[in-house]
Image (cartoon, rainbow, N blue to C red; front, side, top):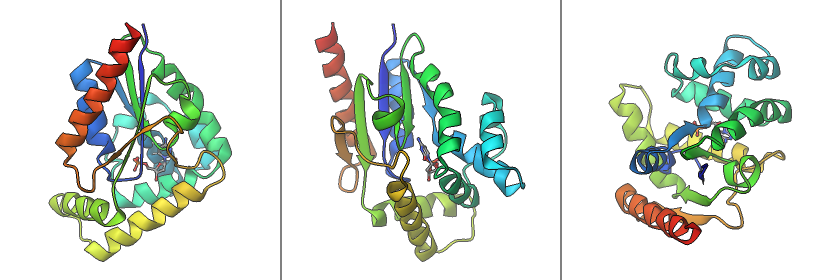
Length: 205
Ligand code: DC
Protein backbone atom coordinates (compact mmCIF):
# COMPACT_ATOMS: atom_id res chain seq x y z
CA UNK A 1 0.00 0.00 0.00
CA UNK A 2 1.29 3.48 -0.75
CA UNK A 3 1.27 6.39 1.68
CA UNK A 4 2.60 9.71 0.41
CA UNK A 5 3.94 12.58 2.48
CA UNK A 6 4.55 15.86 0.63
CA UNK A 7 6.90 18.33 2.31
CA UNK A 8 7.45 21.74 0.74
CA UNK A 9 9.10 24.95 1.77
CA UNK A 10 11.96 27.35 1.06
CA UNK A 11 15.68 26.59 1.27
CA UNK A 12 17.22 25.97 4.71
CA UNK A 13 13.91 25.88 6.61
CA UNK A 14 14.75 22.42 7.95
CA UNK A 15 12.72 20.58 5.31
CA UNK A 16 15.51 18.16 4.38
CA UNK A 17 16.33 17.21 7.98
CA UNK A 18 12.66 16.80 8.86
CA UNK A 19 11.94 14.75 5.71
CA UNK A 20 14.85 12.37 6.32
CA UNK A 21 13.88 11.91 9.96
CA UNK A 22 10.23 11.26 9.06
CA UNK A 23 11.26 8.68 6.45
CA UNK A 24 13.49 6.94 9.00
CA UNK A 25 10.81 7.05 11.69
CA UNK A 26 8.08 5.49 9.52
CA UNK A 27 10.38 3.31 7.39
CA UNK A 28 9.39 5.17 4.19
CA UNK A 29 11.55 5.91 1.15
CA UNK A 30 12.72 9.53 0.79
CA UNK A 31 13.28 11.66 -2.32
CA UNK A 32 14.84 15.10 -2.06
CA UNK A 33 13.41 16.50 -5.31
CA UNK A 34 15.75 19.51 -5.15
CA UNK A 35 18.51 17.10 -6.19
CA UNK A 36 16.79 16.58 -9.56
CA UNK A 37 16.90 20.31 -10.30
CA UNK A 38 20.42 20.52 -8.91
CA UNK A 39 21.60 17.70 -11.20
CA UNK A 40 20.08 19.51 -14.20
CA UNK A 41 21.62 22.78 -12.97
CA UNK A 42 25.05 21.12 -12.77
CA UNK A 43 24.72 20.04 -16.41
CA UNK A 44 23.95 23.61 -17.47
CA UNK A 45 27.08 24.84 -15.67
CA UNK A 46 28.93 22.36 -17.92
CA UNK A 47 27.30 23.90 -20.99
CA UNK A 48 24.43 21.46 -21.61
CA UNK A 49 20.93 22.46 -22.63
CA UNK A 50 18.66 22.31 -19.52
CA UNK A 51 15.69 20.65 -21.25
CA UNK A 52 17.88 17.96 -22.85
CA UNK A 53 19.65 17.44 -19.52
CA UNK A 54 16.30 17.00 -17.72
CA UNK A 55 15.12 14.40 -20.26
CA UNK A 56 18.40 12.48 -20.00
CA UNK A 57 18.64 12.57 -16.19
CA UNK A 58 19.26 9.26 -14.39
CA UNK A 59 18.67 8.38 -10.73
CA UNK A 60 22.36 7.40 -10.35
CA UNK A 61 23.49 10.98 -11.05
CA UNK A 62 21.78 12.16 -7.87
CA UNK A 63 24.42 10.36 -5.80
CA UNK A 64 27.42 11.50 -7.84
CA UNK A 65 29.58 14.37 -6.57
CA UNK A 66 28.49 17.21 -4.30
CA UNK A 67 25.26 18.71 -5.60
CA UNK A 68 24.80 20.84 -2.49
CA UNK A 69 27.03 23.78 -3.39
CA UNK A 70 25.83 27.40 -3.49
CA UNK A 71 26.70 27.65 -7.21
CA UNK A 72 24.63 24.58 -8.11
CA UNK A 73 21.74 25.82 -5.92
CA UNK A 74 21.49 29.01 -7.98
CA UNK A 75 21.77 27.07 -11.26
CA UNK A 76 19.01 24.71 -10.01
CA UNK A 77 16.72 27.60 -9.15
CA UNK A 78 17.25 29.01 -12.68
CA UNK A 79 16.50 25.77 -14.55
CA UNK A 80 13.48 25.20 -12.27
CA UNK A 81 11.78 28.22 -13.89
CA UNK A 82 11.67 26.43 -17.29
CA UNK A 83 8.29 24.63 -17.74
CA UNK A 84 9.80 21.93 -20.05
CA UNK A 85 12.40 21.07 -17.40
CA UNK A 86 9.70 20.70 -14.74
CA UNK A 87 7.51 18.62 -17.07
CA UNK A 88 10.41 16.25 -17.83
CA UNK A 89 10.83 15.50 -14.10
CA UNK A 90 7.17 14.86 -13.20
CA UNK A 91 6.89 11.14 -14.03
CA UNK A 92 9.96 10.16 -12.01
CA UNK A 93 8.65 12.00 -8.93
CA UNK A 94 5.11 10.60 -9.24
CA UNK A 95 6.37 7.04 -9.69
CA UNK A 96 8.48 7.48 -6.56
CA UNK A 97 5.50 8.82 -4.60
CA UNK A 98 3.48 5.68 -5.33
CA UNK A 99 6.07 3.22 -4.01
CA UNK A 100 4.68 0.44 -1.91
CA UNK A 101 5.59 0.94 1.72
CA UNK A 102 5.33 4.73 1.76
CA UNK A 103 7.25 7.70 0.40
CA UNK A 104 8.32 11.13 1.59
CA UNK A 105 9.06 13.71 -1.11
CA UNK A 106 10.40 17.15 -0.29
CA UNK A 107 10.60 20.15 -2.60
CA UNK A 108 8.65 23.26 -3.57
CA UNK A 109 5.62 21.99 -5.51
CA UNK A 110 5.03 18.48 -4.15
CA UNK A 111 1.74 19.21 -2.37
CA UNK A 112 0.47 21.55 -5.10
CA UNK A 113 1.53 19.92 -8.40
CA UNK A 114 3.38 16.60 -8.09
CA UNK A 115 1.21 14.89 -5.45
CA UNK A 116 -1.98 16.93 -5.01
CA UNK A 117 -3.58 13.85 -3.42
CA UNK A 118 -0.80 13.20 -0.90
CA UNK A 119 -1.99 11.68 2.37
CA UNK A 120 -0.15 14.34 4.41
CA UNK A 121 1.10 17.75 3.27
CA UNK A 122 3.46 19.88 5.30
CA UNK A 123 4.89 23.31 4.50
CA UNK A 124 8.06 23.91 6.50
CA UNK A 125 9.18 27.50 6.64
CA UNK A 126 11.19 30.03 8.68
CA UNK A 127 12.19 33.68 8.32
CA UNK A 128 14.84 34.45 5.68
CA UNK A 129 17.23 35.62 8.45
CA UNK A 130 16.94 32.39 10.45
CA UNK A 131 17.38 30.29 7.31
CA UNK A 132 20.38 32.30 6.11
CA UNK A 133 22.06 31.92 9.51
CA UNK A 134 21.55 28.12 9.41
CA UNK A 135 22.86 27.90 5.86
CA UNK A 136 25.84 30.14 6.73
CA UNK A 137 26.84 27.86 9.63
CA UNK A 138 26.55 24.78 7.36
CA UNK A 139 28.69 26.37 4.64
CA UNK A 140 31.22 27.63 7.18
CA UNK A 141 31.58 24.12 8.57
CA UNK A 142 32.26 22.84 5.05
CA UNK A 143 35.05 25.45 4.83
CA UNK A 144 33.29 27.65 2.23
CA UNK A 145 34.49 31.23 1.98
CA UNK A 146 31.21 33.18 2.35
CA UNK A 147 29.82 36.00 4.49
CA UNK A 148 26.48 36.10 6.31
CA UNK A 149 25.42 38.97 4.04
CA UNK A 150 26.11 36.95 0.87
CA UNK A 151 24.19 33.96 2.17
CA UNK A 152 21.17 36.11 3.12
CA UNK A 153 21.21 37.77 -0.32
CA UNK A 154 21.37 34.31 -1.97
CA UNK A 155 18.48 33.00 0.14
CA UNK A 156 16.34 36.04 -0.75
CA UNK A 157 17.20 35.83 -4.45
CA UNK A 158 16.30 32.13 -4.58
CA UNK A 159 13.07 32.64 -2.57
CA UNK A 160 11.97 35.36 -5.00
CA UNK A 161 12.74 33.25 -8.08
CA UNK A 162 11.14 30.09 -6.64
CA UNK A 163 7.95 31.80 -5.46
CA UNK A 164 7.43 34.24 -8.34
CA UNK A 165 7.86 31.85 -11.28
CA UNK A 166 4.70 31.19 -13.26
CA UNK A 167 4.95 27.38 -13.43
CA UNK A 168 4.54 25.54 -10.12
CA UNK A 169 5.65 28.40 -7.84
CA UNK A 170 6.62 27.58 -4.28
CA UNK A 171 3.54 28.01 -2.10
CA UNK A 172 1.73 26.01 0.57
CA UNK A 173 -1.10 23.79 -0.71
CA UNK A 174 -4.48 24.92 0.67
CA UNK A 175 -4.62 21.77 2.80
CA UNK A 176 -0.99 21.80 4.00
CA UNK A 177 -0.11 22.06 7.70
CA UNK A 178 2.33 24.92 8.29
CA UNK A 179 5.41 24.34 10.42
CA UNK A 180 7.38 27.52 11.13
CA UNK A 181 10.83 26.64 12.42
CA UNK A 182 11.90 30.26 13.12
CA UNK A 183 11.01 29.84 16.75
CA UNK A 184 10.55 26.09 16.89
CA UNK A 185 13.59 23.83 17.07
CA UNK A 186 13.90 21.30 14.26
CA UNK A 187 13.25 18.53 16.82
CA UNK A 188 10.06 20.19 18.03
CA UNK A 189 8.92 20.66 14.42
CA UNK A 190 9.70 16.99 13.75
CA UNK A 191 7.65 15.90 16.77
CA UNK A 192 4.73 18.01 15.52
CA UNK A 193 5.08 16.51 12.01
CA UNK A 194 5.07 12.95 13.39
CA UNK A 195 1.96 13.74 15.42
CA UNK A 196 0.16 15.05 12.31
CA UNK A 197 1.13 11.96 10.26
CA UNK A 198 0.11 9.53 13.02
CA UNK A 199 -3.29 11.22 13.28
CA UNK A 200 -3.85 10.72 9.54
CA UNK A 201 -2.69 7.08 9.71
CA UNK A 202 -5.01 6.52 12.65
CA UNK A 203 -8.09 7.94 10.91
CA UNK A 204 -7.28 6.01 7.70
CA UNK A 205 -7.30 2.70 9.57
O1 DC B 1 15.60 22.20 -2.15
P1 DC B 1 16.86 22.66 -2.88
O2 DC B 1 17.48 23.86 -2.24
O3 DC B 1 17.84 21.56 -3.07
O4 DC B 1 16.33 23.09 -4.34
C1 DC B 1 17.17 23.67 -5.31
C2 DC B 1 16.33 24.46 -6.30
O5 DC B 1 15.52 23.55 -7.07
C3 DC B 1 15.34 25.43 -5.67
O6 DC B 1 15.88 26.72 -5.55
C4 DC B 1 14.16 25.40 -6.60
C5 DC B 1 14.23 24.09 -7.31
N1 DC B 1 13.21 23.13 -6.88
C6 DC B 1 11.96 23.24 -7.45
O7 DC B 1 11.73 24.17 -8.23
N2 DC B 1 11.00 22.33 -7.17
C7 DC B 1 11.23 21.33 -6.32
N3 DC B 1 10.27 20.43 -6.08
C8 DC B 1 12.50 21.21 -5.69
C9 DC B 1 13.46 22.15 -5.98
